[in-house]
Image (tube, rainbow, N blue to C red):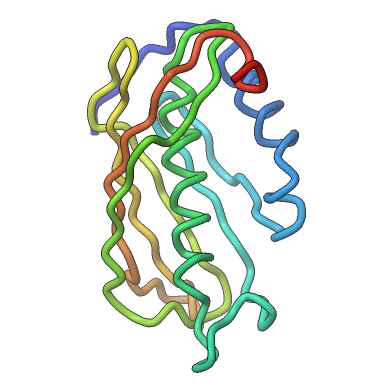
Length: 150
């Protein structure tokens, strides 16, 4: 895996503060379990309220977790004073998302001044074993200043 140098010496505090400020992660119970420059792992325990008619995690939940993991992997490499915004993603749902915990591992493929490309692998932990359920490719944009100004 490629090692990246963050442009902001306070990258980790900035990322964790942004994560903590998201109402969606608190509402859903998403937990950030690993954060390194260009890498982020998040987990979401199974909740039957987040399923579709067959009892699997809804595709929207898979996408939400993947989007966050990729976004924070990208954000870790962005400059101080910036904000992150996903501008595009493509997700392949490869298997039903059923199990105890959904895990999304986002990593930066190519950081850029404005656009950063990430990939996110999503797996379900079930009975101690992981099963791949989705893969996402994402483009994130670095916004200068506060995103709330837009």
